[in-house]
Length: 328
Ligand code: NCD
Image (cartoon, rainbow, N blue to C red):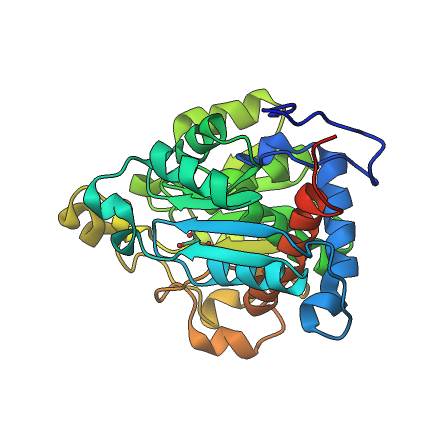
């Protein structure tokens, strides 16, 4: 946890918890209580995210969006969250339209954003980019995805969706299906699920297994982790089926990608015998892993999940930035 950076001094008496002025680089930066508190705040934010209530704790604040990799949901839901909270955004939506194209380093770019905004939301193709940004900036940095590393705010909205459907995060059997090697959303989510005592089932093509290091870290922490090669069996026993896209852009070699492309697909026949309360999540975008026919079933929760990105990010931004300047 990166507390007390720069001039900021934590003041635990402010609000229900003190995320004020803090970075969010990896999901492990948050304790279980902090996660549950954020989810509760996110539930309260839903009417504001829907536009039926107005609350503007970010009035007068500027948030910089540095997106150096493609994004639809993450960037737009962050922007929507800032605007709904009464703040304003400055945005780099395309690395090629920024001075990175002229060879500017990430740390120089981050230094500029630090001078122009009160917080920085960063998406970058390099693992560790958000951590580097947090080192050079004395403003809060939120990791919106660093290469194949972490995607902690996605995890918060994944957990919010699970919590909304089940009323709990504990004791669920969660199948992570797909590209567990390069998928940063599952890397973050697996840690959080372990923290809440879920049973984690890993189902992927052999080439796309969860990195060994991460798996043994989860096991060492006492998490219930199991590999299941039989996708039908995995689906039949699941409470939550978390499907991911093969991260084509992270393959060094097109041939390697072609070997695994199209190797799994969730369709109606696969769901025969599934639990009634099965909930299917996907961080989106999907690229053929979930057949469109699933959208009409009560299992599909991925569009709700994408919407919940707004209230969850509102809750986070409010906790980090809300209520005026953080400095004492
Ligand atoms: C994910 C990402 O960027 O890691 N998308 C998202 O943020 N909703 C998943 C993906 O791109 O497959």
